[in-house]
Image: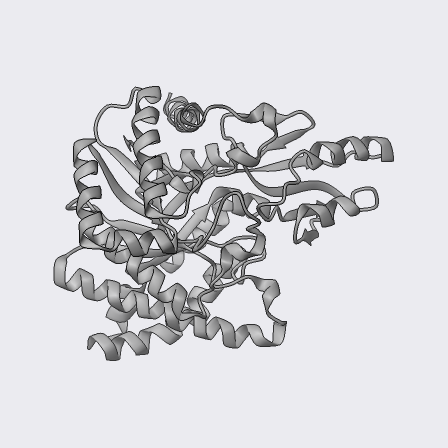
Amino acid sequence: MKTGIGTLTYCTNIHPGETWAEHFAALQEHIPAVRKQLGADGSFGIGLRLSNKASLALDKAEQLSAFKDWLQENDAYVFTLNGFPYGSFHRTRVKDQVHAPDWTTNERLQYTLRLFRILAALLPEGMEGSLSTSPLSYRYWHPEEERRALREKATWNMLQVVEQLARVYRGSGILLHLDVEPEPDGLLDNGSEFIAWYLQELLPAGIPLLSDKLDITAAEAEQVIKTHLQLCYDVCHFAVGYEDADEILRQLKIQGIRIGKIQLSAALKSALPHGDAEREKTAVAFRRFNESTYLHQVVARCGNGRLIRYRDLPEALQEIRDTPAEEWRAHFHVPLFVSDFGLLQSTRNEVAEMLRRAQQDTLTRHFEVETYTWEVLPSDLQLPLPASIARELQWVLDTLNNTTG
């Protein structure tokens, strides 16, 4: 949907299924239903998630042509892809395997290039295309002394993508960008780490490489990188890490690093009360969200500002009685249209603030609601899927209207 700040959609990683037939069936079922619920007029943009298996099928001319016909018949289009989860993402134990295969592998490289090939074929004329991806790897797979070499290999593979995207732009004028998505416990954990990597590793490696490969100047190579490799700003992830959004946005602007896509998502949070009995009530509230499919990293903040990090919710729950922390934030993409969950709240105010900033300054043109946890929410929060998606998008539209009003 077109809004005053850019194109708004939801990410179809919400829908179970790993084959293209399953992906396509979900789109055919839900896109018309969501549009009807919203009463949305005009063309409908889709934030498409393709597994590796689905991408192999859709990369074939016959399947791609049939999908393009369906998009035209339904007045819909694809402008952004989610290329983070490579394999199974629902109804199985995902946890840290959401990062596999990581950016050190040829599998991740070829998958991403294939996704871009598909996106270039689907993208409406005159639009730029974005593709979000993992933050290099999962931090705890690698001993600290090995991480530098792994980052170099992952960076090199990403630069192969940048080179190909630059060649596509030269040849066709189609502008595509790879958007790296920092995530708690990723090799790029947060915005500050992303900016440091970009300035200290990506640009120094990429400028001479692309100057040579594309026969351009160093200054031109830097602009190629900044055009084709951008940031995916997931509001949930940044909120979990207590990041200062204004400072991150300021640093990005100073350095000329662009935001390719903003994912509108909210985390769980709670102040930690004093006393064992009250702490136990808070623990019970968090246990409702302790499910086995996804990682739910917890970042705890102490009164002096010190952060304590837990790889998953069960580890944090073991220490809730004894922790010196005063607040917990947990990585769990909860619905935007719900403000609190009993004793727990959400970080949706950060989403509203990001929308306000986007109205004041052009941050990006791509906005994607990314609440993918409907199947693992407590049962009382589960609603029919089209209604849930429509309520998410309507909350964003209402928030934008209230901000301008």
